Amino acid sequence: MIAFLRSLPPRRRTATLLGWGLLISAPFLLLAAISLATGRNAFATYPVWSDELDYWRNLFTWDAVGLRTGYNGLLEEFARVGTLGAHGFTAVMLYGWFVKLFGLSYHTIVICNAVWVSLGAAAYCALIRPRPARAALLALCLMLYAPAVLYCASSMTEMFNYALMLFYLAFLGAYRRGRSPWMLLLACLTVTVGCLYRITYFLLFIPVILCYARMKPGLRMAVAALLAAAVSVGCYLLTSAVTAPYTQGFLYHLLRVAQDHRDKQKEIRDAVQAVSYTHLRAHETGRNLVCRLLLEKKKRKKHKNKKKKKKKRKDIRGHDRYSRMSIEGKRITIMVEQEKY
Image 1 (cartoon, rainbow, N blue to C red):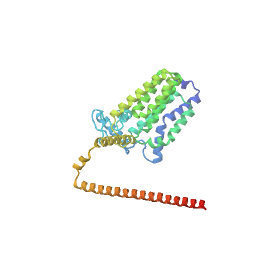
Image 2 (cartoon, rainbow, N blue to C red):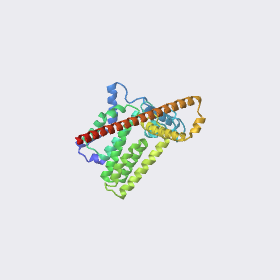
Image 3 (cartoon, rainbow, N blue to C red):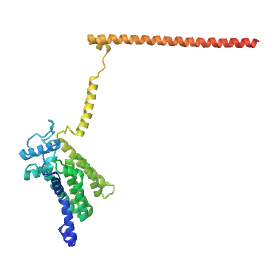
Image 4 (cartoon, one colour):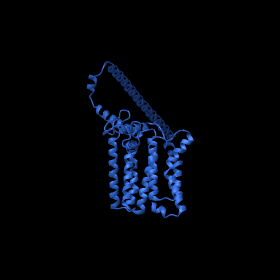
């Protein structure tokens, strides 16, 4: 990168450094702008949402006793393995190193998120070498993007998403330029970290597979796809084992409702058994006897009414048939008398 900067003309070098510096310092500039606009220190925050509380409890346990002991679950829900909370590796993986270096305070997660974004931007500038206008445009988009403005001053992990994408684009773009296997390996490692953080990042393996196979279907693409699937499944099984159930999440409720429905159906199937009428009569109580007699009386009355209606319908049909026959007989008689005359 230094050789590339030295090869540029002085004006172009200055513009490039300014554009790259703006992109790298964008998260800190955004926090400073929010501090000036709101009149409060945006670099310090305290947990409010349940996700933030879970991150802080994980980090506090990590800072105090490490992973040896501690309870981090929500609503008395524990992980199957270990003592991590409802977000698994997330808090310790993203912020644990920063906590060990500088301690846990109100500034920790906010500043660490900004550092992650700055490191991703630095990797992007070093490997992709964007033009000054493109770097300035990316910095402007980051500082004006609504979710970034809303979450940069919180203890949430949304800012790390942008850092992860910057690392991913930097490594994948560098591989596309130089075909370096190390860049492809770093891109795969970035996606793996993303899967440990949020399993939906497994979709980022698709561009990696296409770049590795050079957009040509074949054995190379099939092997890469199988390896990516194996890594994704492994990350999912690992995070599922060490993550405590998040009982307030949509996915948990969806899976829980489906499981409860299956359990209820199984209970109904096990409980419902065919029994004889004699068995029911032998176990009926006085109240059941009264109900049964009333039902049988109603049933007999209904059956009797049905028989009466059926007999009445038969009489009406017979009367109609007799009437039609009488009318036809009178017509025949009249026609015969007319023929005589």
